[in-house]
Length: 323
Image (cartoon, rainbow, N blue to C red; front, side, top):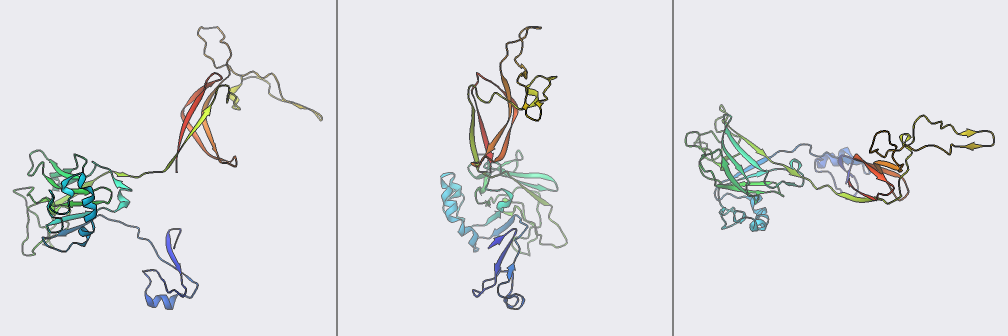
C-alpha cells in the first residue's frame, strides 16, 4: 500500500513486510497492528552495460520481442540475423535511460550522442531518418561517417550500440573494458559512455553527452461554449455604462428603487468626426466561467484578446482544459 510519498504496510498475521526491514527488526521493533513504513528511491541515473562476445546478457534477451516488434521500421532492430548482427552473441553496449528523464517516450529524431576528446568533438550519432537507426553524422570527414552504430528504443529508453570501427587513428584512451593487461584502446562506439580506467592514477580523456527531448501525453477535456445572436450582451462591469452618472438608488423606509434611466456606453466606432454613431449594445468577452452540475464555479478561462460580441453576432469559443 502507498500513502502520501512513502509505502507502508500494517503488521498482521500474514507476516508481510517492507523489503528494507529485516526479519529480526520485523519481530522485535514492531507490534501487531503497527504501521511499517519505507521510502521510495529519490534518485535515478543513466546506466551502461558492456557485453563481450558470447557473454551472458539477460537484459538483452528480455528485449528480444521488443526489438523484433520494431523490425518494420528498420532491419537493424532484428534480434538475430538482421543488419545489426546477432544481438544475442556479439560485443555490445547497452545504455539504459530511466523514464524519469523523458516521461512517456523519447521524442523521435531528437536523440544525439557525442564523443569528445579533451573537449574536441570526434564523433556524433543521430537518428536522422527518425526510424531508430543511429547514424554517425559528423564531424565532417570523421572516420565512419554515415555508418549505423546502433539503434534506440524510444518508448523503452534503451540505446544499443555495436559500432566497431575506430573513431580515431591517433588517439587512444585507458578504457577499463577487456584485459587489465591491455591499457589503451582506440575509441569506438562500443566504448561509448565508458567512465572507468585501467590505471587508477589516470583519468580517461574522453567525455560523452546524450541529448534528447521527452514526450508526455496530458489528458485534456475540450469544451465548446456558444454566445448566440441576442445573448450575453449585458455586462455588470462598471465600464459598461457611461461615466459621471448618478447611480445612487432611491431608498426610504418603504421604498428601494434603482435608477431606471442609466445610459449604456456606446462603443460603436464613428466613421466621421463629430458624428455620433447609432447605438448598438456591445460587450467584450474576456473570461469564461466553467461550472459543475451543482452550479459551482470550478475554473475560469481567460482569452488572450477580448472578443467583441454584438447583438447580431453568434460566437463559439473552444476551451481545452488540461487535467
